[in-house]
Length: 410
Length: 141
Image (cartoon, helix red, strand yellow):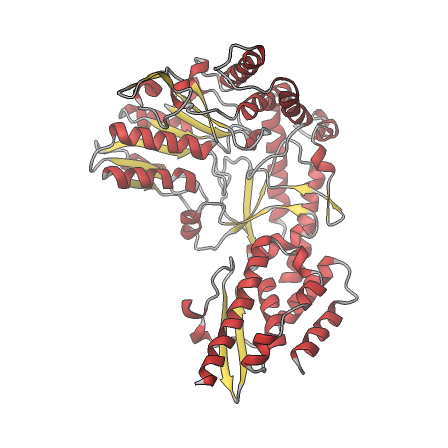
């Protein structure tokens, strides 16, 4: 795809925030891996909900409650359809990826993890796919092991083969796309190999679901976790997909309203999935609005989004390569979403700050992947990350911005 | 020069700079004037907590005055600490404790620094005041 068959001007009009000025300069928003901006349809849907049918779900007999419940469940259906889940009930609304992973780590640990068992993650995980497993391992006497990466940011598959070759391994939790390196892992191969040893797999798709077509049945992972706000939806809501048999097997995560069938002081009978895992009043508006975000992506076509972003990333890498003393952190052949880099000895905070003053929003620092930074022996990186509304002209501004900052800082 | 006069001088340095990139260039320029800390003090003991980049500050006490040296791995941070040291260095603990920094607000830095940077700046000032406080106590003994 090139600039001609993607109506970028029309698409940008869908995102009012893109017209904002930063220090009097047009906003160049390249921090999409942290959170994406929201289209008008999403903003309208949010207001619509609170104006017209705000009510609690799964509780009232009154009409508003029925309308809110229906909208909430329609959103679940839309998301199930978007990721091609076998059934709506396999989609659980959570607070986001972190919450989803914590749910699985906690519940799996309580039911299945024994002293000496191993949980496997990779070296490129976000803290949210490290710490919950550390907590679980600590509680149940398990051990956390880490698949190393190559210098170019790709997973070391030979090491992976060795690490899964043990009966002590009980769970694999791994990211599809690295939020820092942009590496796209060979996730299907990984899952197939884990399944050959009956190891259940959780895939963190927080940085994949907005960039790559996702079919959870084809992927065949037991669990898949993602956040709404990184896919043009609101903050505070996300999903956990789980295979029915696994969601049935796990104990409930939190107790409260909605997750029960019958409560007495002696014993509580739990509700069926997905409600078993949705204790308390959920983020109703968030879920409904996330459904709208999914509609927006579906309307544009995730394949088209992928092509456009691929074009942008290729262009950005090519252009950045011309900057003297640039060092890419992560140069995987298969990449999506983000580019991390450093220029000479310039501190990423300095570079980020001077880009900000030119209206260019990037992320600087360790990107919640401190162990990964340790592997590269760096304090952090500058990360530019892309979304469907970014343009070639914005990348040109990034390049000019980096050059200008480097000339001041170098 | 008094602390007041030093602050005034920095404010004048920035007076005609309206573009933010120019202001940053000035900050970086001032960083080059920073009296560098001796490498042996670049340890955790002299590192300022609360900064995302690494900053070390060392205080030397001579004839009743405190002389600061410092360094940072980030150039903008180095400029910021350099300005603070320029203002405070060579003064008595009393003077340092009894004079507030207003030049940061005056040159518009306060409202334009990112929150992490602002917190870092506050930590640097706090550390310098703590040195002065400790030395003041020592003096009173």
